[in-house]
Image (cartoon, rainbow, N blue to C red; front, side, top):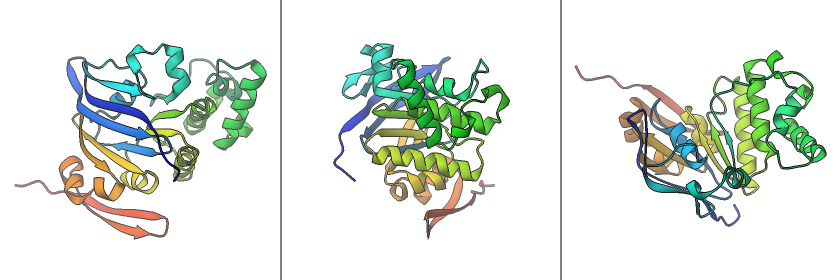
Length: 258
Protein backbone atom coordinates (compact mmCIF):
# COMPACT_ATOMS: atom_id res chain seq x y z
CA UNK A 1 0.00 0.00 0.00
CA UNK A 2 1.21 3.54 -0.72
CA UNK A 3 2.28 5.85 2.08
CA UNK A 4 -0.71 7.01 4.09
CA UNK A 5 -1.68 10.36 5.56
CA UNK A 6 -4.01 10.81 8.56
CA UNK A 7 -7.44 11.98 7.46
CA UNK A 8 -10.08 11.09 10.08
CA UNK A 9 -9.17 11.44 13.75
CA UNK A 10 -11.25 11.28 16.93
CA UNK A 11 -9.85 11.84 20.41
CA UNK A 12 -11.49 11.14 23.77
CA UNK A 13 -14.95 11.66 22.29
CA UNK A 14 -18.11 11.61 24.38
CA UNK A 15 -21.64 12.01 22.99
CA UNK A 16 -25.17 11.28 24.12
CA UNK A 17 -28.61 10.90 22.57
CA UNK A 18 -31.80 11.25 24.59
CA UNK A 19 -29.83 11.14 27.82
CA UNK A 20 -28.08 7.90 26.83
CA UNK A 21 -24.32 7.78 26.38
CA UNK A 22 -23.50 6.65 22.82
CA UNK A 23 -19.77 7.49 22.72
CA UNK A 24 -17.59 7.16 25.80
CA UNK A 25 -14.00 8.35 25.40
CA UNK A 26 -13.76 7.03 21.82
CA UNK A 27 -10.40 7.31 20.05
CA UNK A 28 -10.00 6.49 16.37
CA UNK A 29 -7.82 7.34 13.41
CA UNK A 30 -8.35 6.45 9.76
CA UNK A 31 -5.59 7.03 7.25
CA UNK A 32 -5.94 7.95 3.62
CA UNK A 33 -5.67 4.71 1.66
CA UNK A 34 -7.14 2.65 4.51
CA UNK A 35 -10.43 0.81 4.97
CA UNK A 36 -11.42 0.59 8.63
CA UNK A 37 -14.44 -1.47 9.70
CA UNK A 38 -16.29 -0.57 12.91
CA UNK A 39 -18.05 -3.55 14.47
CA UNK A 40 -20.01 -4.09 17.66
CA UNK A 41 -23.37 -5.25 19.01
CA UNK A 42 -26.57 -3.33 18.34
CA UNK A 43 -26.45 -0.06 20.29
CA UNK A 44 -22.66 -0.13 20.63
CA UNK A 45 -22.27 3.34 19.07
CA UNK A 46 -21.23 2.50 15.50
CA UNK A 47 -23.70 4.84 13.79
CA UNK A 48 -23.05 7.54 16.40
CA UNK A 49 -19.32 7.44 15.74
CA UNK A 50 -19.85 7.80 11.99
CA UNK A 51 -22.40 10.59 12.47
CA UNK A 52 -19.96 12.43 14.72
CA UNK A 53 -17.38 12.43 11.92
CA UNK A 54 -20.07 13.71 9.54
CA UNK A 55 -20.76 16.63 11.88
CA UNK A 56 -24.30 15.37 12.60
CA UNK A 57 -23.78 14.41 16.25
CA UNK A 58 -22.26 17.07 18.52
CA UNK A 59 -19.63 15.87 20.96
CA UNK A 60 -19.87 16.80 24.63
CA UNK A 61 -16.16 16.18 25.08
CA UNK A 62 -13.22 15.52 22.80
CA UNK A 63 -12.86 16.31 19.12
CA UNK A 64 -13.50 14.78 15.71
CA UNK A 65 -11.29 16.07 12.88
CA UNK A 66 -11.50 15.91 9.10
CA UNK A 67 -8.12 16.38 7.47
CA UNK A 68 -6.88 18.06 10.66
CA UNK A 69 -9.80 20.47 11.16
CA UNK A 70 -12.39 20.19 13.92
CA UNK A 71 -15.56 19.08 12.16
CA UNK A 72 -17.66 21.39 14.35
CA UNK A 73 -15.89 24.42 12.83
CA UNK A 74 -16.56 23.43 9.22
CA UNK A 75 -19.54 24.63 7.21
CA UNK A 76 -21.85 22.02 5.66
CA UNK A 77 -20.20 22.69 2.32
CA UNK A 78 -16.76 22.37 3.89
CA UNK A 79 -17.68 18.98 5.36
CA UNK A 80 -19.22 17.80 2.09
CA UNK A 81 -16.03 18.71 0.24
CA UNK A 82 -14.04 16.37 2.50
CA UNK A 83 -16.31 13.43 3.26
CA UNK A 84 -19.32 11.71 1.72
CA UNK A 85 -21.78 10.10 4.13
CA UNK A 86 -24.10 7.15 3.58
CA UNK A 87 -26.59 6.68 6.45
CA UNK A 88 -28.28 3.42 7.39
CA UNK A 89 -31.71 4.70 6.40
CA UNK A 90 -32.65 4.05 2.78
CA UNK A 91 -35.79 6.17 2.58
CA UNK A 92 -36.08 8.31 -0.55
CA UNK A 93 -38.94 10.79 -0.48
CA UNK A 94 -39.41 11.31 -4.23
CA UNK A 95 -39.72 8.85 -7.08
CA UNK A 96 -36.88 10.35 -9.09
CA UNK A 97 -34.84 8.44 -11.67
CA UNK A 98 -31.74 6.78 -10.25
CA UNK A 99 -29.44 9.03 -12.28
CA UNK A 100 -30.93 12.11 -10.59
CA UNK A 101 -30.62 10.59 -7.11
CA UNK A 102 -26.98 9.71 -7.74
CA UNK A 103 -26.31 13.21 -9.08
CA UNK A 104 -27.38 14.66 -5.70
CA UNK A 105 -23.97 13.55 -4.46
CA UNK A 106 -22.29 16.22 -6.61
CA UNK A 107 -24.41 19.37 -6.19
CA UNK A 108 -21.49 21.72 -6.92
CA UNK A 109 -20.85 20.45 -10.45
CA UNK A 110 -22.54 21.61 -13.64
CA UNK A 111 -25.52 19.56 -14.80
CA UNK A 112 -23.47 17.83 -17.48
CA UNK A 113 -20.60 17.04 -15.11
CA UNK A 114 -22.98 15.82 -12.39
CA UNK A 115 -24.76 13.51 -14.82
CA UNK A 116 -21.44 12.05 -15.95
CA UNK A 117 -20.25 11.50 -12.37
CA UNK A 118 -23.60 9.95 -11.44
CA UNK A 119 -23.57 7.55 -14.37
CA UNK A 120 -20.00 6.49 -13.60
CA UNK A 121 -20.94 5.81 -9.97
CA UNK A 122 -24.02 3.80 -11.01
CA UNK A 123 -21.84 1.73 -13.32
CA UNK A 124 -19.36 1.22 -10.48
CA UNK A 125 -22.03 -0.41 -8.30
CA UNK A 126 -23.42 -2.42 -11.23
CA UNK A 127 -26.59 -0.34 -11.41
CA UNK A 128 -26.01 1.54 -14.65
CA UNK A 129 -29.00 -0.19 -16.24
CA UNK A 130 -31.25 1.40 -13.59
CA UNK A 131 -30.31 4.97 -14.47
CA UNK A 132 -33.70 5.95 -15.87
CA UNK A 133 -35.90 3.94 -13.52
CA UNK A 134 -37.74 5.62 -10.65
CA UNK A 135 -36.39 4.62 -7.26
CA UNK A 136 -39.89 3.90 -5.90
CA UNK A 137 -40.16 1.15 -8.51
CA UNK A 138 -37.03 -0.63 -7.26
CA UNK A 139 -36.36 -3.31 -4.69
CA UNK A 140 -34.73 -2.38 -1.40
CA UNK A 141 -31.44 -3.82 -2.59
CA UNK A 142 -31.55 -1.79 -5.79
CA UNK A 143 -32.25 1.41 -3.85
CA UNK A 144 -29.30 0.60 -1.59
CA UNK A 145 -27.04 0.52 -4.65
CA UNK A 146 -28.40 3.85 -5.89
CA UNK A 147 -27.73 5.52 -2.54
CA UNK A 148 -24.22 4.08 -2.47
CA UNK A 149 -23.69 5.44 -5.97
CA UNK A 150 -24.78 8.88 -4.73
CA UNK A 151 -22.08 8.64 -2.05
CA UNK A 152 -19.39 7.44 -4.44
CA UNK A 153 -20.22 10.07 -7.05
CA UNK A 154 -18.92 12.77 -4.71
CA UNK A 155 -15.40 11.33 -4.97
CA UNK A 156 -14.60 12.90 -1.58
CA UNK A 157 -11.32 12.24 0.21
CA UNK A 158 -13.19 10.37 2.95
CA UNK A 159 -16.13 7.96 2.90
CA UNK A 160 -18.37 7.44 5.95
CA UNK A 161 -20.53 4.40 5.21
CA UNK A 162 -23.04 3.09 7.75
CA UNK A 163 -24.18 -0.53 7.29
CA UNK A 164 -24.04 -0.52 3.47
CA UNK A 165 -24.60 -4.29 3.09
CA UNK A 166 -27.58 -4.73 5.41
CA UNK A 167 -30.35 -6.60 3.62
CA UNK A 168 -28.35 -7.23 0.46
CA UNK A 169 -27.90 -10.57 -1.26
CA UNK A 170 -24.49 -12.23 -0.61
CA UNK A 171 -23.28 -11.39 -4.12
CA UNK A 172 -24.20 -7.73 -3.67
CA UNK A 173 -22.55 -7.63 -0.24
CA UNK A 174 -19.26 -8.77 -1.75
CA UNK A 175 -19.58 -6.31 -4.61
CA UNK A 176 -20.16 -3.37 -2.25
CA UNK A 177 -17.19 -4.24 -0.05
CA UNK A 178 -14.97 -4.82 -3.08
CA UNK A 179 -15.87 -1.33 -4.33
CA UNK A 180 -15.15 0.25 -0.96
CA UNK A 181 -11.84 -1.61 -0.74
CA UNK A 182 -10.95 -0.39 -4.24
CA UNK A 183 -11.74 3.19 -3.19
CA UNK A 184 -9.34 2.83 -0.26
CA UNK A 185 -6.66 1.51 -2.59
CA UNK A 186 -7.15 4.63 -4.68
CA UNK A 187 -6.27 6.73 -1.64
CA UNK A 188 -9.59 7.51 0.03
CA UNK A 189 -10.07 7.09 3.78
CA UNK A 190 -12.98 4.67 4.22
CA UNK A 191 -14.80 4.14 7.52
CA UNK A 192 -17.58 1.54 7.32
CA UNK A 193 -19.78 -0.02 10.00
CA UNK A 194 -20.56 -3.72 9.63
CA UNK A 195 -22.29 -6.49 11.55
CA UNK A 196 -20.67 -9.39 9.69
CA UNK A 197 -17.39 -10.12 11.47
CA UNK A 198 -16.11 -12.46 8.77
CA UNK A 199 -16.61 -9.88 6.03
CA UNK A 200 -15.02 -7.19 8.20
CA UNK A 201 -11.98 -9.44 8.68
CA UNK A 202 -11.82 -10.24 4.98
CA UNK A 203 -11.98 -6.70 3.58
CA UNK A 204 -10.78 -4.28 6.28
CA UNK A 205 -7.22 -3.17 6.86
CA UNK A 206 -8.16 -2.58 10.49
CA UNK A 207 -11.11 -3.49 12.66
CA UNK A 208 -12.33 -1.28 15.50
CA UNK A 209 -14.57 -2.98 18.08
CA UNK A 210 -17.06 -0.76 19.91
CA UNK A 211 -18.93 -1.76 23.06
CA UNK A 212 -21.18 0.67 24.97
CA UNK A 213 -19.55 3.58 23.15
CA UNK A 214 -16.00 2.54 24.07
CA UNK A 215 -13.28 1.32 21.72
CA UNK A 216 -12.39 -2.07 23.17
CA UNK A 217 -10.08 -3.26 20.37
CA UNK A 218 -8.36 -1.64 17.38
CA UNK A 219 -5.94 -3.38 15.08
CA UNK A 220 -5.50 -5.78 12.21
CA UNK A 221 -8.58 -8.00 11.96
CA UNK A 222 -7.10 -11.06 13.66
CA UNK A 223 -5.56 -8.90 16.39
CA UNK A 224 -8.82 -7.05 17.10
CA UNK A 225 -11.23 -9.98 16.82
CA UNK A 226 -9.59 -12.37 19.25
CA UNK A 227 -11.53 -15.18 20.96
CA UNK A 228 -11.59 -13.13 24.17
CA UNK A 229 -13.03 -10.09 22.39
CA UNK A 230 -15.63 -12.16 20.55
CA UNK A 231 -16.66 -13.79 23.84
CA UNK A 232 -16.71 -10.61 25.91
CA UNK A 233 -18.31 -8.24 23.40
CA UNK A 234 -20.42 -10.48 21.17
CA UNK A 235 -21.09 -13.48 23.43
CA UNK A 236 -19.58 -15.85 20.87
CA UNK A 237 -17.22 -18.76 21.07
CA UNK A 238 -15.29 -18.72 17.84
CA UNK A 239 -12.10 -19.38 16.01
CA UNK A 240 -10.66 -18.24 12.69
CA UNK A 241 -9.76 -20.51 9.79
CA UNK A 242 -7.69 -19.38 6.84
CA UNK A 243 -9.69 -19.89 3.65
CA UNK A 244 -8.77 -19.37 -0.01
CA UNK A 245 -10.43 -15.92 -0.07
CA UNK A 246 -9.51 -14.80 3.43
CA UNK A 247 -10.34 -15.60 7.05
CA UNK A 248 -13.42 -17.67 7.87
CA UNK A 249 -15.15 -17.59 11.26
CA UNK A 250 -16.62 -20.61 12.96
CA UNK A 251 -18.71 -19.39 15.87
CA UNK A 252 -21.38 -20.41 18.33
CA UNK A 253 -23.23 -18.75 21.16
CA UNK A 254 -21.42 -18.72 24.46
CA UNK A 255 -23.34 -20.69 27.08
CA UNK A 256 -24.28 -18.55 30.08
CA UNK A 257 -23.35 -19.85 33.51
CA UNK A 258 -26.09 -21.56 35.47
